[in-house]
Every structure is written in structure tokens, then in C-alpha cells.
Length: 379
Image (cartoon, rainbow, N blue to C red; front, side):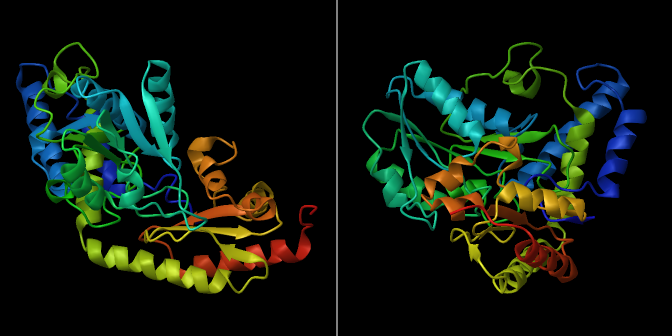
């Protein structure tokens, strides 16, 4: 199998699986239990929290474990609006956010909030800090802008947005979905300027089912997500998913080893893929994505789902947009306002530290063969 869909999920290294297995079979205590097995697990959960927090660049007490990026996004948006309920009920976000943000914002609209959706300037997918700040009003309670777009790899200017908000409307809170940015593009929570940062484990070698939300110092009393037994500083009650948290921490530990070399490798693979793929007739690059691990292209005139199916039959995994869309048309591609034939042929390749040039060569050969042997869509 040739796996070129690391933005959807990532393989779990053996060391991560081993760390989880030990917790599942030997260190299985409930962290809330008061005997030694439980107390030891409580201690380990805090050590694992510290591991993830150090990679994010924040204090451990500011990091709260969640089940996924979607949960973190929903919690951040609702907590931010509650925190700023006396400021207003206006939200600014972008038209290219992950559905976890967009659907939550739509839900908040049904609760009486007003949402401004900022679109990219053009087919490059670029959204500037000025574009976001121009939509901010005195009653803007929250700005939610993703760090890296999961389909086209656009890196959005979170630090500049944070600085601009401080000057224009310092009460407005800032959330960023950094699921595709964490350990992919350089940043630290301490210097970024965001009040909420969402991350997810399975995008970097951890198991599915675990993520985290950073909550900054400007939210001294965050609104709890779940009431109950008081876990996660009484903000997200429920017995901790200790095996998943152990896997998350081990994956972060492994990814941090020679991280700069891994990022350089992914950027080099992306550059190599661009050279190989653009030699294919009718293939066009989509967007101006700067992220080192995401490449969006269109085989103009050839339906993307047919491409995905054909490559899948050959053991090559690529995506027709985000895996989270479950086959539905991409709102990100729609926001780029591409012509029908270009939009219909968009696929995403995404890379990991393990991706090789030989795998790119095989994918390029399969795409060229698809172009040469399959019928394009009618004009």
C-alpha cells in the first residue's frame, strides 16, 4: 500500500501501540481511584499532559484532553461566546474552515448569534489578517480561524490576526483550529496570541479518539464542557481515556525527535511531488498552500472520485478533499470559485515523515495512466 493521505489520519507507530497496550493491560487504574493503582495512573496522566503541553508551548494546567479536534473546536467556540456574552454575539470565521467549526457556527446562528464568513481573495485560497480584521466589529465576541487548511494547505496568519485584534478590539477572543498545524508549522501557544488552540492526536501518529484544547490566561473561569465527576479541572468531566492519552504523549515524544528534519523531509517530498505531477498533461496545482505536508491538485476534466477509486484499486490512497466530508462536495473548493472542470478534478495528497520519492513516482505514474486511458467529463 502507498499511503498519501496523512491529513486524514496517520499510521500508529509500534512504540505508540506498545505504550497504549501497557496501559490497557497492566496500568489500567482509574485516575480518580484513591488506591495505589489509581494514584499512579493520575500521576502518569499529568506527566503525559506535560509532554503534550511542552510540545505546544504552554503550561500543563492550560491543556485539557478531549476526544478529538471536533470536540475541541465546539468547546472553544461555545466557551468563547459564553466568556464574552457581555461583549456581543458576533463571530468572525472563514468560509474554508473545517466542518467542526462551520457547523458549530451555524448552530450558534440558530441560537441567535450572527456569523461573518470571510472568503479567500481568489483561487489561491489566501485570506489575510486584514481580511479578517475588517470583519471585526465592537460586538465581535470571537474570531475563529484555522491555522492550516486541511484540504489545500493554506497557512493562515494567526499571529498577525492576534496582534490586530489586540489593537482593534482587545476584548475579542481568538480561537484557532491547529489540528493540521500542530507539529507541522512552527508556533508556540505562548507567543501565538490565540486564546484557544485545538489539536488532535491522530494527525501525528497517535490513536483516534484523543485531542486537546489549550485555554489561555484571558479565560480565567472557562465554561465547562461536561459536568460530572470533576476531571480535567472540573471542565470536562468523565473518566480519562488513559490509553489514548498515553498514545498521544508517546506520539508527540516520537514526532519531536528530529522534528526539523522531518518537516524538511515532508517539504522536500512535496516539492518533488509538484515537479513530478505537473509534468502530467491537464494537471493543475490548486491553491498556494504553504504547509509542508498538504498538496492539492486537479486533473482538470477527470472526476476526482473516479481518480480516487482507480488509484485505490492499485493500492494508492489519496483523497478527494477532506475525509470528514464523507463524499460530499467540498466547501473549500467551492470557496475558491474554480471552473466546473477544474473543481471536479481536485484531489489531495498529504505526506508524512515516512513518505518516499518512490511512492510519489508510483502515484504520478498512476495519475498519468488514468489521464491517458479514462474518459474525461463532458464539457
